[in-house]
Length: 106
Image (cartoon, rainbow, N blue to C red; front, side):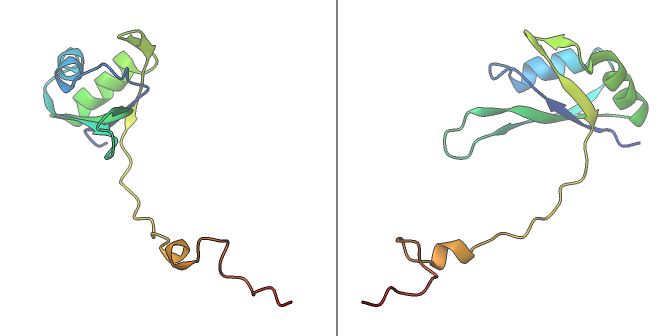
């Protein structure tokens, strides 16, 4: 088992320090990363917590998954590796008025 956890449904007001303090009840927290919106800088409501061992990660899942944290029931499970999704840049090359199709002929 991995020791990196996905934590979802986090309160937007939660800081990395709040999360670290909460998860330290299950063991040693190696790192915390809150995901934020690039444009606004606001939290997106999820993040990742890395525990020092797989056993501590499993303990954190058992202790916190579905339980309330700062007024919200959080989701805690093993983080899945990020999938590389192909980016679709084709839509950028179309004209603004629908583009790509045939022109109307009168």
